[in-house]
Amino acid sequence: MNENRKFRNHISVVLEQTAGALAAIAVLVVTQLLEHLDEILKADLSFLTEKGALIVPGVIFLLAAAVIAQVLVWRKTYISIEDNAVVIEKGSVNKQKNTIGIRNISNINLEQNLIEMLFGTCKVKLDTNSRSTADSTDVKIVLKKADALWFRQELARRIEAAGGLSGLWKPENEAGKGQECAEDQRGAVCPVEDGEEFDVRADLGDVLRHGIFSISAVSVVIFILALAGTVFSMVETVRNADLLGTAAGGAAGIAVAALIALSSLWDTVKDFVRYYDFRAKRRADKIHIQYGFFKKVEYTIPVDKIQALKIRQSMVARIGRRYMAEIINVGMGDDQEEKNSFLILYCTENELRRQLRLLLPEYADTPDIRTERMPASVWAAWSIPFGIFAACTFAAAAAAVFVVPEKYIRFVWSGAAAVPVLTLLCMLLRYRTSGTGADRRILKTAGGYFGRQYLCVPFRNIQYVEFSSNPAARATGISRGTMHLLASSADAAQGIPYSGREKEEMIKERMLVF
Image (cartoon, rainbow, N blue to C red; front, side):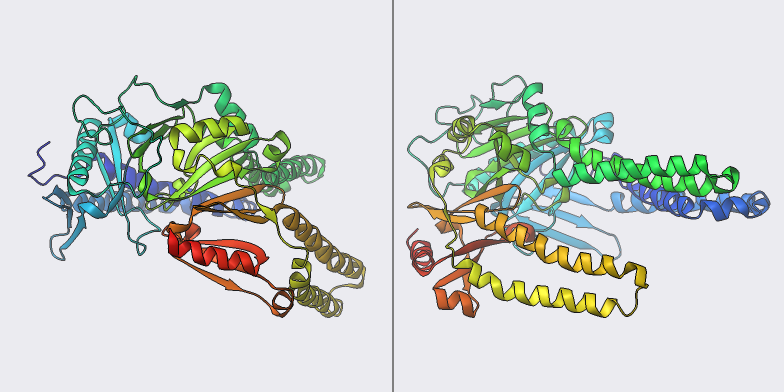
C-alpha cells in the first residue's frame, strides 16, 4: 500500500454494517412476536398468504436499499496519510474532511471479529487525546490484515518521528531496554511478531481461573432465578388443562425466561473465552497486549498515556485472595467492548507484583501502599442522607397503604423496613472496604461493597480535584473528594473516600509538586 495515495475501507465493511442492522431488526421482530404469540395464533392468518406477494418483495427492497446505501458510503469514503495527519474524506455532495494530527493519536489498536477472520481483514482503531471524543473511538478502518499491519507500522513510525510518544517519566529499571527490533532501533515502533516471546502469557488454566474469580454474584443469582422461572413456566404449561390454548403463552414465557437465563449465564462465563491466549509484553515505552478467541484484539498502549491503575477483586476473588489489574488511559475504555482494559488476569498477590514489574514498573510499588480506613466519624456524615432516605421510604409506604389492597399492606411495610436495613448493611460493607493511602508519587483509594477496587493515580495525572462535606462532616473535620482524569466519561471522575483535612491538604500540595 502506498501511503501517498488515497485508499478505502475493505468492501467487507459493507457486510459488517448491514449484518448489524439485520440482526437488530431480527431481534426486534422476534421479541414482538414472542410477546404477542398467543394473540397471533388465535387470529386469522390468511392475510399473510394473500398479501405475501407484497410483503416478501418489500422486505427484499428494504434490504437492497440498506446495502446500496452502505455501498455508496463506502465508495465515497477515502483515507490517506499526509505528512503530519491522517485525513478521512466522506461524501460527494456534502463533503466532510476530518484531519487528525499525528501527534494527537494516543492509541493504534487492531481488532478482528469472526466476519473479518473469514475475509482476512482487520480493523484498525485510532484514538486521540481529546476529551471531547473520549466516549467513542475516533477512527475505525477495515483493511486486509497485511495492509492493517503496514498502516499501524507507518503511523507509529511517524508518531515516533514527531516525538508524540515520548515518556513522561521513566523508572530506573525501565522495561524494554535492549529489546529494540533489528529492523528499527526504535523498539516501540515494531509490532510483536508471531512466535516472539512475551513477558506474560496465560495458558488455558490461567484463563479458566480468571473466569472463575470474575464470576459476578449478581449474575449467578439472576441465572438461578431465571432458570427457576423457566422450569416453573414449563410445569404450569404442562399442568394446565387447556394445554393447546395456553401453549403459545407458555412458550413465550419460557422463551423470555430462557433468554434471561442464557444472558446471565453468558455474563458469568464470558471471561472464559474473551481472554483466550492472553499475552502481554513491555517494549521500551509501550505495552503490547493480545487476546481473544471469537474476537481477536491487539492493543499497543503508550505508557505515558496511562492515567491510573485499577486493582480489582470480585467477591469470589476476595475469598480466594486473588487480584487482577486494569488500566485507565487516554483512548481506551471508550467503546463498550473496551470498558475493561485488562493488563493482568486474576492471580496471587506475589504474581501480581511480578507481572507489574515486567509490564508496568512505574506502578510496581502500588501493592505496598497501605490504605487507611475512613474515620469513624463518617457515620455522623452518613447519618444525614440516611435519615432523609429512611424518612422518604416510610412516607412512600404510608401513602401506598391507601391505594393497595389490604391483603398486600403487610408486604408494603415489610419492604419499607427491609430497604433501610439493607442500606445499613451496604454502609457497613462500604465502611470496612473504603480507604485512602499515598506515597511520594501515587494516591491510592479503595472502595466497594462485596468486592473491592483499588485505584492508583499518580498525583501529576490528576487534572483537578474537588472536596465537599455536609454539616456533620464539617463538624467532625472530614471531607470527601472527586478527582478528575483525562479519560472517558465512565472513568473521568473518581471518588476519594472520606478522610481528615490533613489528607485533603496533602493531595492538593502533591498535585502541584509532581
